[in-house]
Length: 111
Image (cartoon, rainbow, N blue to C red; front, side, top):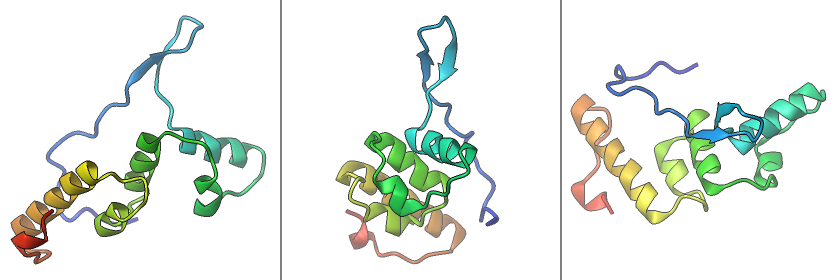
């Protein structure tokens, strides 16, 4: 497990809430996490190649990449990261790097 470079200043975002049709309000599941849990419960293994074949919303794929600690530069190159989201996380990375003197990225590299 990697150690955060700096304490988190913001709480983790809450999942959206959904009504399950049985009178219960639940957190919205992530389709990829559900696929992993279902496979593990059945004694099966899944890797990232298997998950790529699972029909899932783009938002779930973006969230999953973040949850497993994908690098920011690598995530921004994934086919399902749109330019707007990629630009937003890239700017966060540049600001984080400047604040913590961790990375040195030229302003012109910001899209």
